Each structure stands twice: as C-alpha cells, then as structure tokens.
Amino acid sequence: MIRIAAASIRSRIVPTILVMIALTTSMALLLAVDRIQDATKRGFNQSLSGVDLVLGPRGSGIELILYTVFHLGKPTNNITTETLKDIESNPLIEWAIPIALGDSHRGFRVISTTAKYFDHIQFGGDQSLTFEAGRPFSALNDVVIGSAVADELDYSVGSSIFVTHGSEALGKVHDDFAFKVSGILNPTGTPTDQAIFVSLEGYELIHLGWTNGSQAVSLKNLDVSQIPKERLYPKTITAAYLGLSSKLNLFKVSRSINEYAEEPVNAVIPGVALAELWSMLGSIDIVFRIFNWLIIAISLIGMVTMTLTGLDSRTREMTILRALGATPANLASMVLIETAIVSITAVLLAIGLVRLLTWGAADFLSHWAGVRIDLTWINFSELSTLMTIVLAGLCASLIPAVMVYRRSLARGFSH
Amino acid sequence: MKYFAHVICFLLIGIQTTFAYEATEEDFIRWENAWDRLIPQGTYDFVPKDFGYELLFNPTFQSQLDAAGKVIDPSLEGTTIELAGFMVPIEVKGDKVSLFLLVPEAGQCIHVPPPPMNQTLLVDTTSSPTELRDLYQPVIVSGRLSVVTQSFEIADSGYSLVDVTVTTLDLGEDAIPIAPGADGDR
Image (cartoon, rainbow over the protein chains, first blue to last red):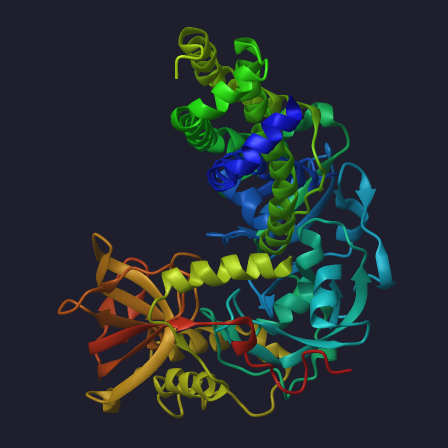
C-alpha cells in the first residue's frame, strides 16, 4: 500500500514538491521564531550574574540594563561619584563597581571601571571571569579586552590601542594617548567578549583636554605619569554594579536608593528589568505566533486542495485499482498515506531548516548583542507541535479520503 | 554561516540607504578638516605649548575652554562647506525633516553633553525636506554657511546651513580608517 502511495506521489511530483516546500518553510518559521526567542531570553538572562543591583540615573530600568550590560543604546545621563560614595557607605552593600561608558574602539565598546570588576562580575550563573592571557589592568594605559575583540582584531598582550570618542566610527580618535593590552579574557558567550576594559583613571585622563564632547587640549606634550592618581578619579560615572552582603536586603536597599534625595538615581534589579522587557515584548510574540499558525493552516489547505483537484484526474486509476481487488477503504487509506508521507517529509526537512536558521541567527545575535545561543536538533515540545501539525494535516485529508471512499462505492465499474 | 548574517545586514542596509555614499580615507580627512574650519584660527592660542597637569584641573582654564567653544568665525559667511555628521531632528513632518541640527557625533544633544556651539549647525531643509534618519546614521551635508547664533532647548548652534543636499553615508566596516601609530601595533 505504501509502495502504491509513493508511486502515486512520484507521478505528481511537481505539485507535491511545491506543497511540501510551503509546509516545510511554514513549520520551520514557527520553530525558528520560537527557538531564537527562547535562546535570546536565556542568553540575556545568563549574561550577568553576581550583581544584585545596578545603580544609575533615574529613568527606565530596562534602558539602564540594556546600555550597561548589553551595550545597546546609550546613557542619557550620568551620576556623580559623590552619590556613589554616599550610597556605598550603606553597610548592607558589600561592594560597588563604578562603570563609565561612551567611547569605543573599532566598533567595540570601551567600559571604564575598576579592577574589582574581574573579581565580582560573573556570568552564566556563577562562572567568574578568567584570563586567557595577561592580567587585569593596573597601569594608567593598561586595557583588558574580551575574547571576541582579540580574535577579530587579532590583538595580543602588548598590542596598542587608540580609543575613539563616542560609539560611532566618525568619532574623533583619542590619538594623544595610547593604551596597551595587558590582558585577554576567556570567551564567555556574553557581551563581555565584545568589550574593552580600561581603568576609570585612564578613561578620565583621555578626556581631560575635552570640553563639551570635543577636544581642546592634546595630552601629547604632557608627562601624564606626574598626575596623582586620585586626581584622575572621575566626578561622574554612567552607572555602578552593586553587590549586597545578603539578598534578603535587596528590596530594602533598592528602596533606600530610590529615595536618595540629593540626586535622582535609581537601583534596578537586573532580573526584574529583564522580566519587564520580556513581558513588554510578549504581545509582539502573540502576533507573531498567530501569523505563523495562519501560514501553516494555509499550507495545509493547499495540500488538501492539491489532493482534491487530483481526484478527478485519478478516476481511471481508482477504477483500475478497484478492478485489481482494492476495497474502497483501501483507496481511502491510500490517500491518507500519501498525505502522511508528504507531511512527515516536510517535518524532517523543517527540522533541518530550523537548524540552519538558528545557526545563522546565532552568529547574528552574538555580533549584535554578544549573546550566544545553543544549537540543538529538536526537543520534546517542538516535536509535539510538529506532530500536531501532521495530525491536523491527516484530519484535513479525511475530506478527500471520504470522497474517494464514497465515489468508488457509488460508481463501482460504471465508468 | 557568518555570511548569512552579513547578507541580512547587507540587505537591511541596502533597503535603508538607497542612495548611500561610500566614503574613502580622503573623505574622512576632508570632513575632519571641515569641522575644524568652523573653529576660528587662534581660538585655542591661550593654551600654552608646554604645561603641567595642574592646568587641566584649573577652573579658570576650564571656563576658558568652555568659552572657546562659543567662538564663531564671521568670515565664513556665504562659503560652501561639506560636513559629515549626525542628524538631530528639530522639525519633523511625517517622515520628512525640515529642520535639524548637524552634530559631529551620534547621539549628541540627546545624550550628554551637547557639542560646543561652533560645532553645531542648524540645517534648514524647508524647501526640500529630507527623510528622517536613524540617530546613529551618519549623513553628508553640503550647503552654504551663514553665521547666525541660535538657541535651542537641547543645544546652541553657531552656524546655519542653507541650500543643502543631504546624503546618507554608508560606513562599511572597512571604511573606518585605522589611526596610524597604534591600533594593533606592537
């Protein structure tokens, strides 16, 4: 019976292939969108750990997390280091790591911070940052680079770097002070891979001759080693990562920060901000899904239409099969088997296509947001989704199958 | 599979910037010089050739620097100029911009701090409104300079540009010039 069904498909190969392409792409689309979404969420959620609160200027928490952790967007305001000092004095806060953003190097963001960053910031749950080569920055001109920076620009310990003012390629280059790579971090699969770390003092130094975002005085003729380090400690920073001695005090501390009177600041719990982001994106999700299922329904209708229109031209074939001893039930099940072959092949192709799509998306995501996603073939919930589609296809083909059954009973050999 | 992402990026850029111009290294130098021309010669003469670091922390010196950013060059009146920078829209009708500030760096004005007055130009495109572009999309603007100071909530502009043409600047990864003397040198 399967052999006959397969042969029947082969005789109508072109329309069958077209229907199969429609089914395959619609299923692959459904799975790929789901999977990229899942993986993005997981990637984002795993990018920063060990940090209990992010302190920044008052405003949207989501935005604060996006520009500090994921290097997406830009800060609209700064906070003063005086405020940080004040807040840090709270005994419930164990450590505070200030960060200042704004500059870049060949498209990679420069993060200025303190060397404590490498001790306290973690990723993927509880993994610490480790050095592939070299050591954290200590001198004014030391920089630490993420693994992707080292790979893409082919830098190693000792390479020198000019920092560009601003995050765009058109920005002026701070070409009066060269930094030297002192360390390269191991790959993490997080935005850290795409980052360049310098000390707060080094960052302040290259902006000394600047006013209102443009350079007025060059450092070229200046002996920078004479400047006492404490004078280079910046007056303003972009944000700060805070670690608490006990997570039980999380809300207590964040409330006290949000009520800080001297400067408009707020403290954001990274996980909460991300959860807000996902719920905001949730409605877009639903629209996507509805469209996807509509496309699948249309493909299935296409498959049934093909079978139905085929029936008329197959009257002779059916008659011969009946003459050879096939019962009406045999003929009906042949139609069903044909559908099953088409839809199961489409499922297999879709799984392959999804793999291909997520592969491409993974590369794009890791470039865009430094987020790495895992590649898998198929999981249980996806398999059940696909099986639902196959079953729906079979149910829909009951229409042509029943028609075949009734026609062959009624007509018999009269044709 | 890197190519897949590249192809997608390429397509997106291609759609967004139909008439994009691809810049050469000479262009970058030319534009940088054009921005410098807006600062009158000798504005920064008060900065000594040799100075100790103390000067940089001197409040009087800092206010002198701030004042220098407000010096404009009246002799530039009526000259034509071509600059590459970023658009900060002021007057938007639908998806067309009829008035915008041209600043040397993306996101200035919206993000702190605004550029000095002599590095901020008011571009008047009322006669032929140009399309609204992304804040981070560099544009090439050429036109006739007029030395007028105007104040806006977000920034002050020292010059304005009329009879302008606005072109989208395509910045491929390879288009960015490498700073000599560093950038990977050992």
